[in-house]
Length: 47
Length: 349
Image (cartoon, rainbow over all chains, first blue to last red; front, side, top):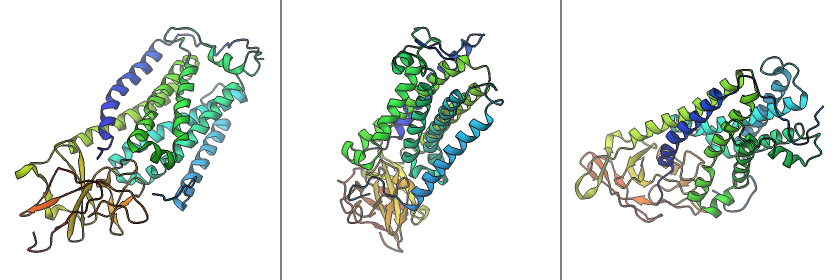
């Protein structure tokens, strides 16, 4: 017999929430004041 | 619950579900392409770049919705119909994400003499946090979505077994985390409009908040009931049992049992459905059988066996009554073992 996986969900989400919020906030806080232009990529000759 | 291989067992509800999904995706992309310039995007954004954003944001919101369905269904049974065909939603999300990748390759690296994949994966080679090659994060998430889409059929569920299959599909949480960081370290670094940051925060709050809330509610329900003589566990008073509706009881070893009153009889089964470990205790009796709320798998309440020609079976538990109280033996019987139901008619014990 197997227990359903809801306890695994309960263990995963508090940690995942902390990591996700930390990553998201750090990404915004450390964002350069001037927006970074997308690219350039290797060898790009975009018109 | 199939006895032969079929690619998709179409039913009316699945067709309606899939048509709604296809219509929703088409509508989102069309509305985005028509209205986003000037509202959420720079007015002069190019068509190819706009398509890339349309499919990317669509896949992101689809993944967000998919992840919200599970906790919503756990908090409120009315969301269960959305859960039934969630795998179709996931497969479509993979294809929308592929459309996003296709649009990226068709724009950023389309004019490059370098191989498109080399160009894509070498665009960001900085090892700092903000210079992180976010493209890799998106590709890793796409690889997980591919693995999930490719193994979404019941054949793979039976081949891998429910525990391994479920664990494989829990990688969707990792995929979501990768997508959030793909967005944060990618588009949010270049974008001046706040709409993308706000959208990501809303998605994050909804997904994490609902999972945390569902966890708290279930942890409260998960307390072990009072123990009686011989280690038997108190389930409920007999007059508390509603006919045809399941009740979940947590046992001392952490397992859960599903107790059902069916007419004047009461029987108990494992709470974990043999299909995907769905919570049988949240199901109902339909046609005399315990019916899983997730995908409708059915079991005879007294034997734990699926009705012929199906072969699934779950563990059963012995029950006895103590006055007006119902007690359960926490030691599970082998799957498919017939047990005598407790009779709740007058003067019966």
